[in-house]
Length: 356
Image (cartoon, rainbow, N blue to C red):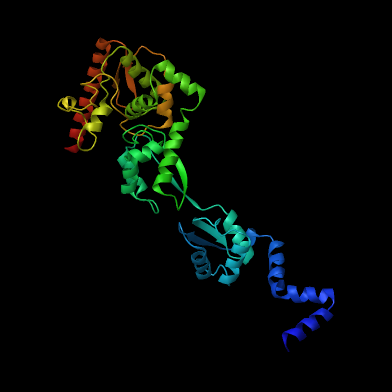
């Protein structure tokens, strides 16, 4: 049959016959799309979900291969057809997803577009240093401690966060965070810094900085010292008040945590020679605050500096149970210190006797 005969026969068809001829090639696709569209996803009926990891930068073809390998789809071409037909090719996201096992191809596309990526929990402890946080982060999926530290000292990256500081020490707010598996070091640092900077955005925080005469960097620096000193939450505003009082009187802070920061080796009891270490962080030698934070303080210590107790305290000495004795006069401080030294000697004597 030649072309002319085909055209002649086609003209004899009724309008509905012509429509069927034109629609027949796409009819199966249309029927399947309608069935898929009007069939809701019933996740409650799924006995088991499949963990699917979509890497950053994965192509549509690679995603289709992964779905096929996990037996989540039966036909890769049909899956890619729906993705392209719906205009979702650039909307498929990287991450780890718990995918129901009863989805058809259309539902699979819709699920991957709207599903929330699986997350895992990290908890940063108050007072951790930048290196300690990096070491912890480096043990998490897909994250590098080296890259984390590199970015935390990168001037260009730090500037992109709106900061003018040499490093991000003190700006990583210790909290519990829930992270997507595909998160990168840059994104994580932005989250940690962003949570810290949020504390300073309120009007009350801005007024507080004016009242105490410290800028944001100085608040974080003092908060890191408070974090290093305080074991009891109730004492944080008192310790902050004490150091603010010393600053106003132009007294050296003489804060032991700043010596621990510059002292080599693990934390331990300070010796007189440690107090002579030459460093701008040595608050026994130099007046005022050190150049920057010595750890990453928690929110409670930051708020303690912004909203300190009203006291006249200038001195404190540990009691031995985590609390401190606070005094306003040097004479009283020396008495409290002598009392603590006596208690420490008694404890050591008992420990030696127990070891015999």
